[in-house]
Length: 638
Image (cartoon, rainbow, N blue to C red; front, top):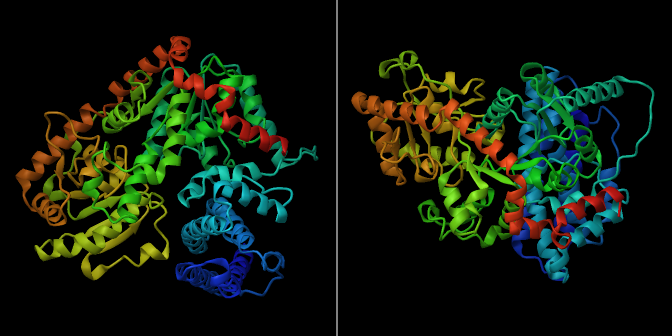
């Protein structure tokens, strides 16, 4: 695997340097920025090759010890006369395929016990998101120059099919591609059809037989819910994963059998879901009739979509083949709000305080994403949101009917205050969050570059420890600074146990949306949290103090860090406020009852809900069913 990866990286170096040298700036109307961008990408690829080759040498081998394919060189030769084709094939096909397979490759290498190699691959996969983003940026530019701006997606697909006439093999990592600015409309119609055959019985076919038996057992159940997502619900990866796992548990407590569906391949995690939680998992590509057959066989009463991307993939089939099932969209957060804020701060240079007013937030840069997410809300019978700020925004600015919305908070068990560590039993300051989430990456870098120097200037002596999944890449390792007391601690298997050791936690978020698991987790273990207004959004309780402090000005932020860290009476009051918030707003029993009461009421009233949902009826009319017809085109190979 490492030999193949090294060859891919070496081929990428050649391809990008050839792109820089071959295509004339005058002929193709290319600014200097084009060459700067691809020079950086080529440098990344050279560094990636060295990382892999160094690892091979550590293992007693080296690049060149095994034969390699000429496919990468052939693609370079075939696109030598066409810049649009070169960008389509190299960053937008070859690099994007790395995003699709990256997590699976990391998991496979880890399962073999080679953590060092897995760390190298994880860094490469993460950094190649920027390469795909660069490809999208410059393909749009070239399409505009060539007068194909209005049909640039179709143009991209035409070019890809010239070189890959059978289409592109799935599955696609929808979220990784979206994070690289590559929406599903670019590649989903290109997915190659699965050719069905009947091989001899193997371990793989045995697994499929077992899966069929599992589906049959699910179909025989009285109360059934299908939870569809672009990825499997994973409790240890993020707050959203924890919340999804909790929703599953709540459904099971009410007598529902749960079957999870995703285009992602089955793995060790799905096996644990079944063994530990009794959750069945079924792999179904969105562009096949697999999900349709599953619905017809099982006839669930409830279908829950984990974020709007899943509704786009599977919603039309649920509407058509399980019409009696209530379709519930779980937003997790409003994605287009988060992306609009990120654009304002990262691209437009605005202060994050200027993005707090949702009525004034500039949505134009993410309009396409906003339209997709809003359409998904309108197509659904019931939409779960987490933040009252987002509910108010959806209702007042985007005319979403309040009757179709329901708040679904976190689910925390009762807190035994006698078990919480005291002020004197704790030390240092913690941040925790997945490094796959852009707001967390920005928060960590802002903390290191801006907040930490200010904190040291006011004699703040506490160390700042950073935890999070997917944080092993070289980019983040460079932030580790023992002399300044800024430590990158890696993944925390148990967030609650980790946070309970610290006197203060921080959530210095400059953009984002939804409610923040890192804050609620801190409160649950009695750790006060200092956050920004972005972090506290949707989590403040009326007539109740915040469990820590909220500050947007950097100097004020570090002053609050120091105050909570050194003032025990102040710390005790903040701890009590956080525990109170967790014990009321996020109480498991209360929120489970509220959720299920609303779901069960919606199930009994679904026909009336649909009659009154005129926008949904319009979107489900034949003229507007774009997501269905895209899937039909893919499935037919048209």
